[in-house]
Image (cartoon, rainbow, N blue to C red; front, side):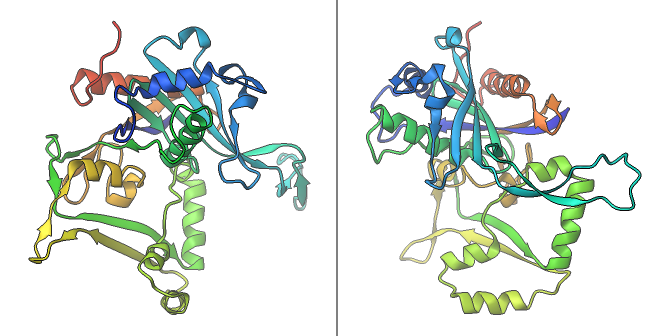
Amino acid sequence: MAYATVQYRQLKTDGLPEGTNLKSMIVAAMRTSRAAGRIGDSAKARIIDLDQDGSYVILNKISDAGAWDQKVFAGQLIHLQSGADVAAVLQSLDEDAEEFLVEQVNLGDARVAKGILYFAAIDNHLGLIEGQQVKGRTLERYLTSLLQSIGTIEVGTPIILNGSFRAGDGKELTEASEITIQAERNEGPLAAAASALVDEVIEREAARMRRDGATVFDVLRTLNWNEDAIATLEAEIPEDGWIEGFFKVFIKQRNRRKKSIGRAAINEALRNIDPADIGMDGNGRERGGIVKLSAKQRVQAVGSLLDPADAIEQIVNSLKEWAATGKIDCTFDA
């Protein structure tokens, strides 16, 4: 068993035709034919080179065709990169050897999975379990590319899957005066090595789900720090130390007062930020008292991977629970 965080998302319908239904659009796409066959019948037809770098994002495992007209459509999104030489030990570790030989192994035509994401959609509501490198942003980009390619949405119209945030007391979030974001820290070499060891030996599952978001230095670059200034700052970090950054986002008016940030803006702006970056875990609270709609679920594991069927089942269970408690405006068939 493993623990996984199910996140809630909802399609932003602004700019889309009235009555847009995300689940129905995905099903319609699956029923569309391409040269490689009907999209829903052929995983090959669902391959998209999103980054134009030889890696591929694939809507791999999907709901059976006989269930497409039911309430929920679910899928597994995988991001593959071309095989490469990797360092490996081919000997049995039970072998009585003075040392094990580390060799370069060519994976040939094999494709390495950078990450796997699972999702389930009902109407415009969606639950997902992110992978190590396959985040909600990847799903947004994939669905945008897929639906644009068959003419469902116009080129230039993105699919945006908003998050849902509530006040710490569970009440509906109205507005905020500021948002505090913590960037991923940049560590010195010794601290990084120690952290990697802890991740590998003690927190392997947590490390597998660890974010790959912006670092402090990445954020400083967006604030127009030049590389010399960043290098000077980086040189100050001791080998066993790190640098952390906390950034406040707020809107000021001409009278110098802060202008409140509305709920819709928060749901969109923070949708793809890792919960840990704003002080949240599966059911945790943000420093300012904001709760992200998400739930930790126990999922069956096959080795280091989640069992696809159980991952999707737990996502659907979370959606049903949120619907039953009125946290999302959604109904399931009896």
